[in-house]
Amino acid sequence: MANYDDFVSWLPESFLGEDAVTLKAFLKALGRQFDDLDAAVADNQNQLFMQLVTWAIPTYEAEFAIKLVDGATDDARRNNIMAKNRAGQGPTPAALLNILSAYGYACQINQDFANYQFTIQFTDFKGIPPNMGDLQTLLASMTPAHLKTLFAYLYNVYSDFNGKYTYDQLETSGLTYEQLQTQLPT
Image (cartoon, rainbow, N blue to C red; front, side, top):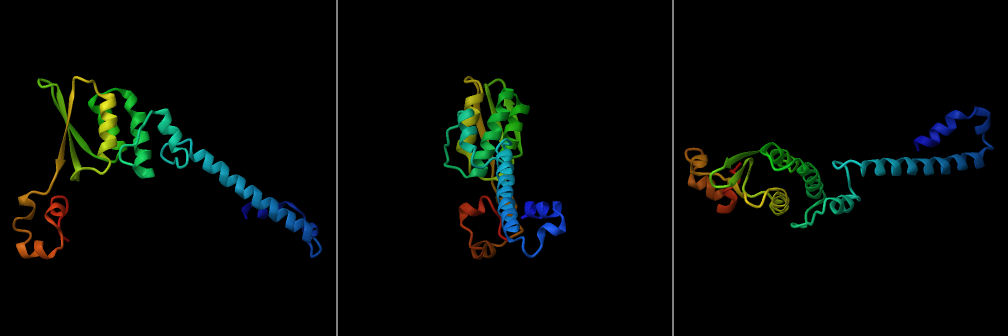
C-alpha cells in the first residue's frame, strides 16, 4: 500500500486522528486503486518490450506472421518473436548468427558456395535443440530458395568417455545410450 502511505504523508496529523475512520478508509481504498493502476501501467509497459512480453505474445506473433510449430512455452515463443524481428536484416552469416543468438545458441556458420549450401553448427548445445521446428521455419522463410540449409549437432563421442569412466560406472549411472549421447554421468 505504497500509495496509501504517500496519501497519509501529505495530510497534517490533525486530519488523521481517532475519529477520522471514514477518511482513513477512503485513503486505503484510494491507495489500493492507485496500487492496482501502477501495476497495470507497469504490465502494459512490459508488453512493449519483446523480452518482457507475456499476454501480448499472440499480437507479436500475428504481426510477424509466426505460426507455432512446436506448441512452445512462452519463453520459446518470446525467443521466436525476437528472432523474427532480427530476421529483417537479410540472410547474411552475421544476421543468421544474430537470429540464432536470440534462441540462446552459440553457432558457427560454414558456407559452401560451390554446392549452394551452408551449415549451421551448434557449438554449445549437445543434441537437437528443443525448438528446432520453429527455428527451421524461420530460417526457411528468410533464406533464398536456392540455398540449402544443413545443421550439424554436437554429441558425446568415445573419446569423451575413454579413460574417464569404466563400463560399470556408465552402466550404474542410470543413463540410457541415448542420454549418454548428450550428457555425461555425474
